[in-house]
Image 1 (spheres, one colour):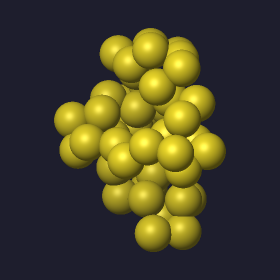
Image 2 (image 1 turned 60 degrees about the vertical axis):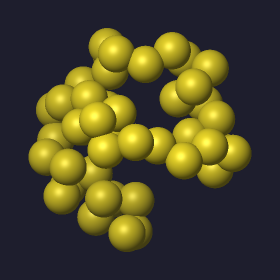
Image 3 (image 1 turned 45 degrees about the vertical axis):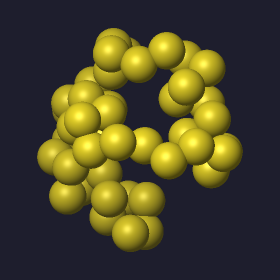
Length: 45
């Protein structure tokens, strides 16, 4: 998966230690081949 973010950054986002920017959310969703809406729904947001 190439979301355009460093693995350490992504890990800190997953743990809730860091807030993620909209640009990074878009990149992560694209890397997972889902829409941003799907990503947020899966996250329970």
